[in-house]
Amino acid sequence: MTPSIALDGTLYDAPTTGIGLYTRELAKGLVGIGTNCQLWGAARTGQHLRQAHSRSLWYVDTLPRLLEADRPEVFHAVSNFTLPLRRVPGVAYVLTVHDVIPWLFPDTVSSAFRWQFRLWLARSLALADRVICVSDVTREDLLRHFEADARKVRVVHHGANHVEQVPAPDETSLKYLDALGLPENFVLYAGALETRKNVALVLEAAHLLHQAGKPTTVVLAGQRWFGSGAVEKKVARLRAQGLDIRTLGYLEAPLFYTLMKRAGAVVFPSRYEGFGLPPLEAMRLGVPTIVSTCGALPEVCGEGAEYVHPDDARGLASTLSRLTGDVAVRATAIAAAKARAAGFEWKKAATQTLEVYREAISEASAR
Image 1 (tube, rainbow, N blue to C red):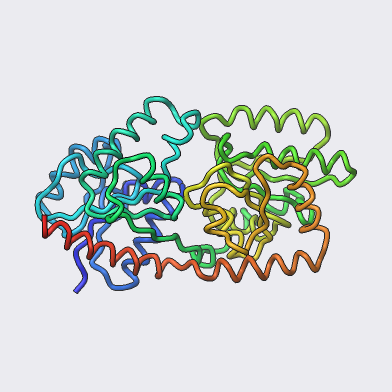
Image 2: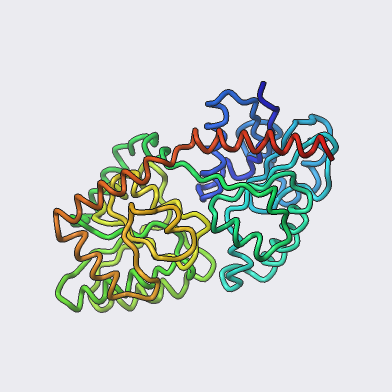
């Protein structure tokens, strides 16, 4: 018999972020393997809707009362640090930590959020019966920078097969995409326009190719983020020099993945990732992918992607030229990408997560 699970759904109905996608796909995966999983705190879906309450207030004030009333065997917080601030007897606590970026890269978040992250995560680690990290890199960084019991920390990778289940875009969306007039083998960056993501390297590589007489269309698909102003200024300067750079902003999943499938290459030269889902999605779709040598990207992408140093614009330009200009190289890259990404399934993630729940229940019972 599977345990009763209350899964943190506070980002379930929100515009898609990595954590929101993780919540939705994990919930589907858990239901798919027959668990008794309820979604708590979403805006419109599941049980105990959050309604107008802020997420922080819901976690601190509303959630403990709900746990005391319903007594699920497990509560699983999925947003890095948001366990209730006190224990509820009889309920095991599981926390997913995607990364510790607010602590490692203070310039990428506000000072207030950084300290909220630090203090609340420290408290959550003290209360958690088990902690799930989405990569070995995140686990190592968590244990290096925070007080956590290594015996309670498990690694469960994301799946990537959700990209094959997204519905096709509607006719209006397809007309919009066609109207962009994107050339064959355009380069796609998929992610938020923030400094840590190192979008500037993509732009610098495009500039080098332009100077070499190999003009390349670059598409930036992602929302504005903290510190995105510097990227936007660089885009404006390069456009003034004749480069074809398109900023499309946030795109809904059907349109986004259709755009990704049409790309000549996906580039993701981030300076740090706790996992790195966009390049894995591109690989699953059979798109040649280039990532940096930083963070969890080598762990996740393995031999399915090409690698560049995060400061090597010339190396990136050269790799882009090969992947988009040589049919044989491109075919090899596509095969390698698909082979690597095939091992990342949400059913596998859900099965491993269920085992963590059982461990957490045993831990809580022994306390």
